[in-house]
Length: 208
Image (cartoon, rainbow, N blue to C red; front, side, top):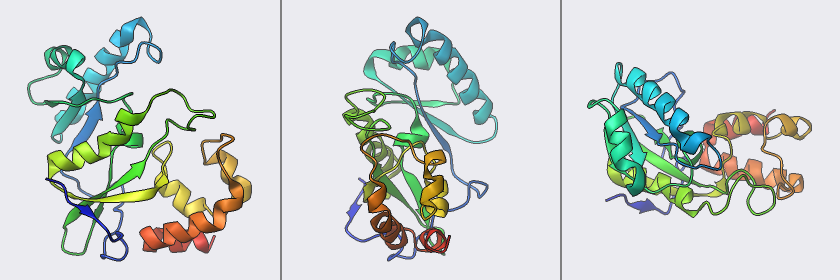
């Protein structure tokens, strides 16, 4: 079972590793939405199956599929890819999945960011998104990793860019997913939250 932690990664000595650092496996989600994917998502499913098979040549892959699509995903994916039953609203694991953090001893925990479909009720891509908002917690349960529930909404899977450029408000249009819900006046508080949760990267943002 994943334990929800009341502290923050920075306070506990955890950091977000670089993308080129070693990791245990890759997590994916199965494309299913007929409103986002043409032809009942069949071409997307075939493409995702090819991507999963290619990644599985080099590292373990786990893919989440809904109950209705589990059998299809299992049939299209190679046996080396593990398929788990996991409800979700769309297939972008980098956006809805956890951010793993590590400490000096190599221990791993996960940050469960809030998710609102890239804009929420005023500009979001789809509604509802409640199942997507649960994906990170489910992944951490499967992995049995400690969980931080962040107070921030992460968009587009580009947290590392946000942290480095959060102070450059003039450039935010090229970094953030714009919607009328985005409050640029709250930027100082965003930077403070980043520094509290992500000491190393947040400090770089504050110095930008």
